[in-house]
Length: 283
Image 1 (tube, helix red, strand yellow):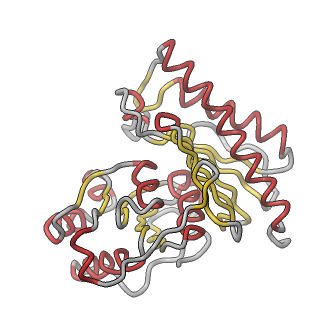
Image 2 (tube, helix red, strand yellow):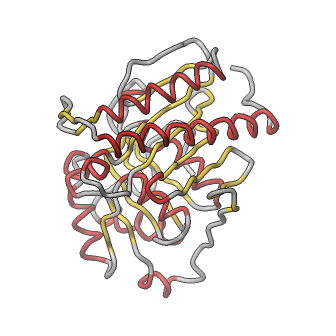
């Protein structure tokens, strides 16, 4: 495999990725104005015609700017192949929120070199925030640097908010006891689902986000963003030999808070000391 893109090329790719999510906002705005249809997928989750339209738009723009690159998206078949650089798209992460008019959804775009994420963008149209990062280039929100400060000591832990996904995600991951234990062990555990919860962890509004049973497109952008912001990202890979089919259980946020959560998982019989290998490794 060739080396990952050098900083100047990666910086240009990041600029292009941010431009692409800005263009996909117009598709979302049109859907909100004109209305959209929805249906249930085989896994029981929702998909709207806006999801499809956003992914089609992103794919068209990516193909025109990076014609040799592979593309994987949540809603449409894989395109390209044979190239070591792969774009991963989640057109609307938080479709349930989008469908119900809750503005806490977003578009996710990541770039992988082999299996390792090297670029990530989380765009939150309803909040007019775009989080962007690339390996070695730092993290930003709307062009301003994002730097995550760790806790000064354990006593501050009780004042932190811990974000967590829906309990059903933990049931699907076979670990409902993790959800229940965290709810009982900390005075401020709140459900902030989807990429909105990840964005809260990035900006330090919550001490950490615990999000289980994710797919590739749900989490690759967050890994780059969190690590470039100076936080910690831990991921436990579940089933699936192929990258597209894998499931991931992730914890991301301030290092001391992440460490505390890992200790709680260990107390529930989790593999505290040896998270399973995932794309891009473990940090």
